[in-house]
Amino acid sequence: MTDAMPTMMTSAGGDKPFDAPPPRQSPFANFLRRGRRHGGLLLGASILLVIVVAALAAPLIAPHDPYAQNLAQRLIPPIWHPKGTWDHVLGTDKLGRDYFSRLLFGARISLLIGLLTVAISGTIGTLLGICAGYFGGRVDAALSYVITTRLALPVVLVALASAALVGGSLQGVIIVLGLLLWDRFAVVTRSATQQIARADYVAAAQAIGCSTSRILFSEILPNILNALIVVATLEMAHAILLEAALSFLGLGVQPPLPSWGLMIAEGKQYMFFSPWMIGVPAVALVFLVLAINLVGDGVRDVTAPENRT
Amino acid sequence: MLAYTMQRLIVALSVAFTVSVVAFFLLHLSGDIAISIAGPESTPAQVEQIRHQFGLDRPLVVQYLDWLWKAVHFDFGNSFYFRDTVVSLIASRIGVTLTLGAISLLLSLVVAVPLGVLAAVYNGTIIDRLALSFSVIGQAIPTFCLGLGLIIVFSVTLRWLPVSGASTWKHFILPSIALGWYAVPAVMRLSRNGMLEVLSADYIRTARAKGVAPAVVIFKHALRNAIIPVVALAAVQFGFMLGGSIVIEAVFSMHGLGYLAWEAIARNDFPVVQAVVLILATIYVGLTFLADVANAFLDPRIRLA
Image 1 (cartoon, rainbow over the protein chains, first blue to last red):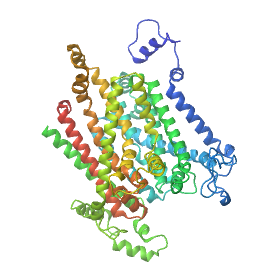
Image 2 (tube, chains in turn purple, blue; image 1 turned 45 degrees about the horizontal axis):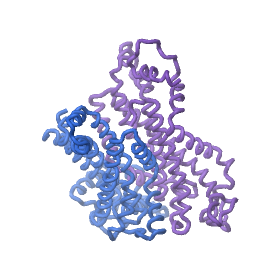
Image 3 (cartoon, rainbow over the protein chains, first blue to last red; image 1 turned 90 degrees about the horizontal axis):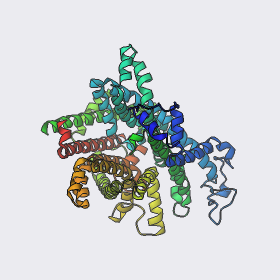
Image 4 (cartoon, chains in turn purple, orange; image 1 turned 90 degrees about the vertical axis):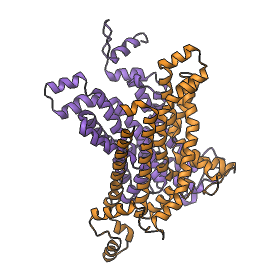
C-alpha cells in the first residue's frame, strides 16, 4: 500500500512515468485512502460528525423543551459545579430553560446559517470568479473591480446595518451574509480558472464548438471543485462566527431562538457569578468552527498536496 | 514608479466612489427610512412629514449627490438620535478606535512574525507543528468570546485590569489582545510561507555556502524579502480591525467608532451609520493603496510588471 504511493502521486501530478499505469481508482476512493491518514482531517470530521448528529437528533436527545421556561429553576449551574443536578446537565439560563437542550437546538441554527449562507455566497462568488477568470480582459477588469469594492466594505458593520434593516431574523441573517461573503469564492475561483483556462481540454472543447456555458460548467467547474470545497468550508466557519457576533450584538437571530451567539449575549450579564453561561456556548462555537476549519485544511492537503501551506 | 502610483490612485479613488454609492443605497434600499425613524406606532401623516423634513421625498439620485457633495466637505449632516453633528460625533470617537486598532496590529505583528519565522526556520519540526496548530485553534476562537474570556480571567478573577471603558492605557490591554488575536493566524501563515519560499532560494544557499552566519542569513538576507507580502497583509488587517472593532468595543464598552455605529444602527440613525461605513471603507481603500505603493517600492518586480 505505502509502496504504491509515489507512483500514484506522480501520475496525478501530470508527468507520467513510462512504467505500468497505476491501478484505476475513483478520485473519491483516492480521497478516502489519503484522508484516512490525515490526523487533522480525521479529528475535524469526527467533531463535526458529532455536532451534525447532535443537531439532527436534537429533538430525540434533548432532555427538555429548549423553549420551556421554569422560573422556579433559574440559573442552575452545570453538573461539574457542586450545586449541579443531573436533571439539567449543563444547567439552566435566566428563564429556567435547559441549557443543554438549547445548545443542541442552537447547533441547528449555526449549521443552517453556515450551509445556506455558503449556498448563496458560493453561487454568487463562483459565477463572478469563473467568468472573470475565463473571459479575462474587460470582463475580468470589471469583475475584479466589483470584488475590490466588496473587499473595501467593512463586513461586520455592513452586515449589522443590513441585518437591522431587514429586521433581525434567521432568514434575514442568512440573506445578508450570503450577499456579503462571496468575495473569497470569487477571488479563488478567478485565479483557479485562470490557471486552467488555457488547458488543452478547454481548447479541445472550444474547438469542437461547445457552448460557453458548457465549457464553464462541465469543463472548468469540476476541475476547480477542490479549491471551491476548501473555500466553502472556510466560509462556512466565517458565516457561523459572523452570525454569532451579530446575534451577540443583538441584531442577528432574535430571542427566543437558541442561537449560540445569543446565548453568550444573554449570559454576559451573569458572567461575574456564572461564567459557565458564556463558557458553554463559547466552547461549543469554538469546537464547531475548529472542526470545520480542520476539515477544510484537511481536504486541501489531501486533494492538492502541492498547495499545502 | 510614478505611473504605477497614479494608476493605483485612480483605482483607489474610483473604489472609494463606488463604496460611497453602496453605503448610501444599501441603507436606502433595504427599508423605508421614514417609517423606521417615525417608529411603528406613527400615522401615515407623521411618516409623510418626516419624509419631507429629512428630504427623503426627493429622488434618490438627488439625495445621493447632495449627501456626497457634503460628505467630501466633511459635512455628514446631523445625527437623528444624538443631538450633535455627525462630524463632531465621529471626531470624538475615532481616536479610541484608531488607538485600539494600532495597538492590536502592533501586538499581532510582534507575535505573528517571529512565530512565522521560527516555524519556517524549524520547518517540519515540533516547533513548526505547534505554531501551525496554534494558528488553526486561534482562528476558531471568536474575538468576542476571547474578549469575554479575558475579562473573566484578568478582570473578574485576578482583578488586574479594568472590565470596561477606554480612559487609561490599562483599558486598552485586554481589547487589544482580543482584537489583535484575530490577525495572528493569517500573518503567521504568510510570514512562514514567505520565509519558506525565500529560504529555498539560490542566493540563500550561496550565502550559506560562503559561510555567512546563520543569523545574518535569516534576518538580513531572508527576512527582508519574506516580509514584503506581510506589509500588504498588515495594511489589510488594520482595515479589518477597524471594521471588526465594533464587536470588541461592544464587549468592553469602549466608546469608539464601532460603539457609535452599534448605537446608531440599533436606533436607525442613518446619517451616522452611512458616515461610519464610508469612513471605514475609505480608510481601508487608503491603506491598501499605501500598501500597494509600499510593495512596489520594496519590490521592483511589482511596479515593472
